[in-house]
Length: 338
Length: 230
Image 1 (tube, each protein chain N blue to C red):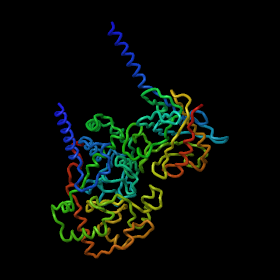
Image 2 (cartoon, each protein chain N blue to C red):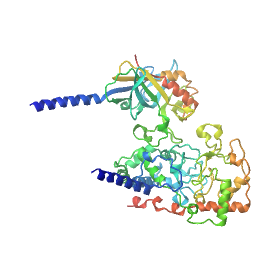
Image 3 (cartoon, rainbow over the protein chains, first blue to last red):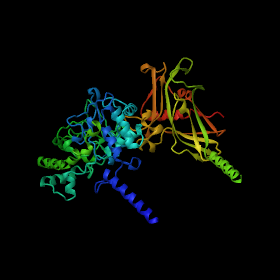
Image 4 (cartoon, rainbow over the protein chains, first blue to last red):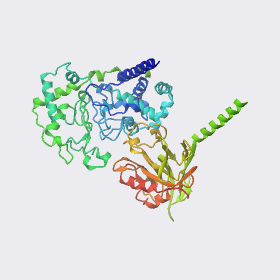
């Protein structure tokens, strides 16, 4: 009897383990995720609900804008070609929409770290008048009026009633699955493939000049830094100071990941650079000095034009095609059109 | 017959034990202005000789309820978060369920939500963000929302709006409130906002909407408005 119980327990443990590793895997040599999965354990049905919500235009006041409007899978979940994203009634926001990936490792969200937990992140675009212009209360009312969502909520939570908590947790579940760790860079690190000589040289230059902020393997420290951009006279964006009210944080913005950077143009918090070459030139030639400038940028970064090209060649090895074309992340047409 | 009697005996014993297990203390909040109950929208209250005030919203979180005896905590309510809305009679009272009857002479609670809860992701019940007490432009619960009108305010429509909150140093707005008790069965907590409005200059101070120094000063002042009739 004891033996049987033991095997059942061990079996349950392993089956739970297999399910959880299938839904979310920490890539080898990566740090422990920041997100507390114990408070929101992943299940297939909850992830699916989150995915449907992500593509749901009813999240916006006029039922036109979904999360995916500004976070499209084919651009690693950002809004390509748009320096600043636009929301309902063609209103223009004041920042470049960030690419969404590896969110389980992020300590805070938004360019200024205004949001402290992935669960709470959707509240911001849902409520922002230049984005979805709605409210979580109104979203939940719409979901509860929909037969399709009552079924999806029932499948996910064994209760068809939508609440703010369940809606946000389901969205988190889908967002947590957006893990990008299958680029050429990753294969090279696992010795499954080799960099070209140019990529290899670019990698060395990257490690010397860029990696203290864009730290491997996530290609960000998730900290905030002033990277020497001049103030946009129209936007007058002071960055993190808006949140902390501390002048030491002036012009500091979240250090973005560089994974999939090929797909996520334009660049910087206000999308001021269209091409990677412009980004590199900013760091070598155009640093705007101020009291909060990152210490790493106080000494000039010297790169020849060949070296710049090599760095870009390396950056392109961070593209993860299996991520942007992952069918589990795409529009769930089987749910919307059944 | 004997068996029957024994059964009745055990039944009564069980009821008795059960009754002890669900001993409750009723908490009642009375939001008032100068001792007059606050009614939303429909009533105007005299601020001073010349000016009056109308309330449109009065909602606040009380959390972490504890009962004390001689300065020692004798009861802590688990998962203790309550949203009080002066426009929703049902929210003005709730029960503390205790394992047994405990003697106490003091009640302690927080006005607002603690910082750990503020960083712990999506919550349900009274903490569900659909309750409208969570900021959207940045993370954090609004501890207290107080809105209304007074001719004193030079703002648009003579409105005042106080959304007090903040969980991060140095703008942590939560306030601990300790009140001495006479009886422990029903605890009636009065919340007289006259004291707060007497402490501010409404003409100039009619708008606090984010965690900052003003929010802390106002939160401290509002925390002094809670009292129990002795």
